[in-house]
Length: 124
Image (cartoon, rainbow, N blue to C red):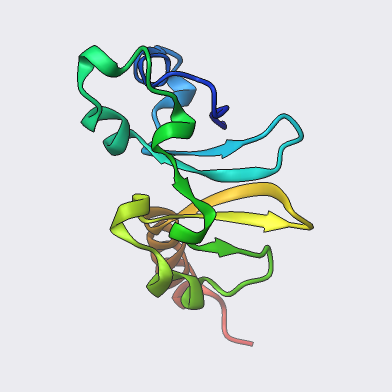
């Protein structure tokens, strides 16, 4: 799920679609190229009276302000680069195109799965 830069903060926060129950959204242009990242926390900080005039592009973090990873980057290397300002999220980009988003909670779930699953493997 992405957010176009021209979408208003009011539209972002008022969308009832359950797919939008995320804490952060990649902001992409019409060609799917990543422009930035917007967090729900940043959107909620916009005063209500300004939310219909303020766009996602106005409040998004620029790509220099949060981590960008490649599809083959190690999660252990990415984790320390995640910042609270970006809601502990990173965009995953390949050949300049957005292919995913990873969060600290995603990494935590993977680590939990690995540590609880691998000890139960049969010995070879």
